[in-house]
Amino acid sequence: MKGPLFYAKILLFGEYGIIKDSKGLAIPYNSYKGAFKQADVLEGIPLKSNGYLQDYYQYLKGLTSDLVTFDLQQLKQDIDGGMYFDSSIPQGYGVGSSGAIVAAIYDKYAQDKITVLENLTKDKLLKLKAVFGLMESYFHGTSSGLDPLNSYLSLPILIQSKDNIESVGIPYQQNGKGAVFLLDSKMIGETEPMVSIFMEKMKNEGFRNMLKNEFVTYTDACVDNFLHGDAKSLFGNVKKLSKVVLENFKPMIPAKFHALWKKGIDSNDYYLKLCGSGGGGYILGFAPDFEKAKTSLINYDLELVYRF
Image (tube, rainbow, N blue to C red; front, side, top):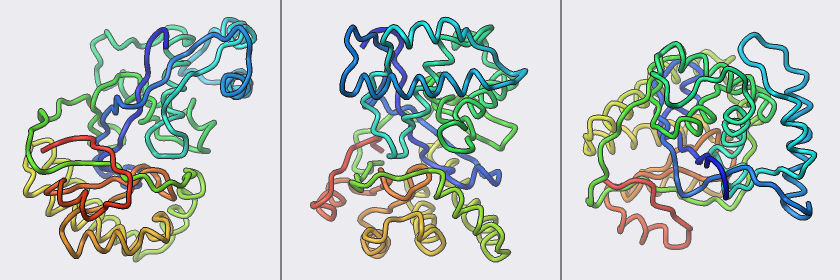
């Protein structure tokens, strides 16, 4: 791949909660990445990708916003010249495939862009997030802008609230037993239908109370535990969070994983949570003892993300 690389992201904590002002923590995931390439002959995947970029160009052309303008003439010229986005980031897996494309487009074609080398004040981060939300809404109907922001900066992002975000350092990985991992559901998830289900559930007062009193409380605690390197408290709070998700977010968990989800909570071998909006793609896992979790999940493909 040539040119700047844009990485996948993992939202460790905050899925759905950040819509209702919980904390959130997103980290770059360097195992997957994408970059623009030029093809002399368009066929196969490059042809498909180029077609997507043609459609996206039309969307950007119709965008009227004071927040951002693009060099659309150059973008069109490059697309017509065979440009495509060469990406290893799996689509529909909750790790930011569209976020990487958005970040790459902004980096190359936005005029008067905020660069990663600037002093990234809170105002600049919020502006970037708003721009990216506008750009990524083409893919999902609505977007927080967080995935492209993470991909663009390639830094861990802490969401304190909707109007308070900052880049943060996370504790160095240890060589301990504990781990964060991804479990491949072997299914594609779609963001928009899952968000629609969530918004429908939000009309229910009981669901809103659960979200505020349990889901957001445990999510915030997990973020604090992780940033302070308190693994023991983290696993306790992730277990509570996993239980709340199983009880209240069942439509977002593919049916064949309900029993596996419960098995983790009951055995304490691992705790599962949504990775992104759910519905398929990756499921995020936390294990106090990764070797034990691997034995417990012997029939599933796991990818290590972080060690405690």
